[in-house]
Image 1 (cartoon, rainbow, N blue to C red):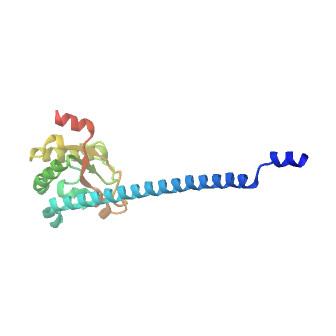
Image 2: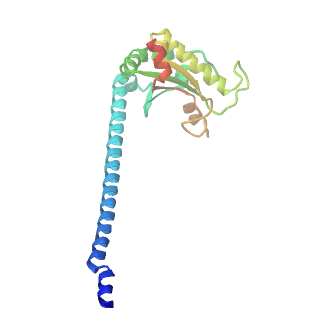
Length: 211
């Protein structure tokens, strides 16, 4: 009688084994789903990165094509979408008065830049930079003010020569962000520059221009 009761109350081994296998199978399925999900996310991220790089490359090529003539003449440089112009081409030392050759150069840039910006719905940021030499004489308090006035001079000249004012704005960086350490005059000459870079319109700028 006791043996019969024990056999009735004990759980069969196959049932325990079946529960164990079911649990393992469930865990495997969950792990497989997680792995597939991660792979799909990585694939999507990789595809987005490829699209982004392709768009950046197309943007660079389009800008190079638009500026082919001044680039070929060596009067401007193009690096990562930033158009660089040597300060000595545009201005005399410690001056914000545009030189004739600088004005002529800006005039050649207005047409292709305006077409490029309009096609892409972008704006042009004009940035002024200086070397690290302190300003001791002249009308400017410091390098920040000099770089700001130079950026404004270039911006106003572009507008005077046909660039819509809604497409361009000025920024000043002073002696910050040099292209080379200010160790000698050659390096300082490179750091005295104006850069122009196409940038996306902000939502407010786009709304105001649409209005």
